[in-house]
Image (cartoon, rainbow, N blue to C red; front, side):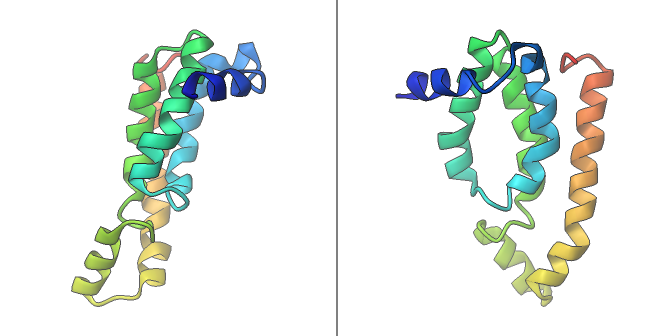
Length: 125
């Protein structure tokens, strides 16, 4: 089923853009972490993305690295992660205030790390 989903998705990715999949993931996954909890992302979405990238010639390790850069930054602000509620409850602040303050910093960190990976040659561009 994974291969069938990936083959259907490959048609939507222009071959010239395939090498940019890790960079796009690094930029987009932090905001998307507000929509996906860790389990649904790592067990449901990431395998399909990695298979699509693999069919287009992009190593799966690059997709995994980009996922860690983007997705791991969003867990402390995601309302889908129980640890977020533990943090705001222990500190005694409102979740919305926490997200307003933390989201730009985490998104910026994700962008800086993704750019560093491109500059250092970890992700092809």
